[in-house]
Amino acid sequence: MKNYQLKYRKSVAVAKDLRAIQKKQRQAIVKRIEALAQEPRPTGSTKLRGTKDLSRLRYGDYRVIYQIDEDVISILIIKIGHRKNV
Image (cartoon, rainbow, N blue to C red; front, side, top):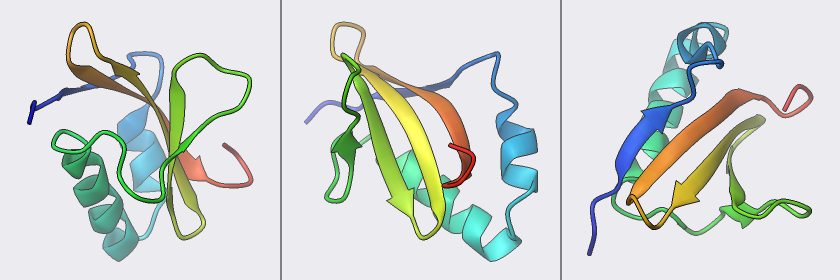
């Protein structure tokens, strides 16, 4: 199985997005993001309708929006936040 490289979009303040989340939940979300390197389409992830290659990963009330690039074998984290804001 391939190991995907995790990247974060520069325009997204991931650190700021994560700071707003409680520590226990933040650690779990980061763990789920890191697991994407091994399995980019885990159980519970959903391809977003109306987009070519964006997926959503849910963790409780929080969402991680990401893009899988099979050519470069990478995953670009686009947004992390509460479901009402994402």
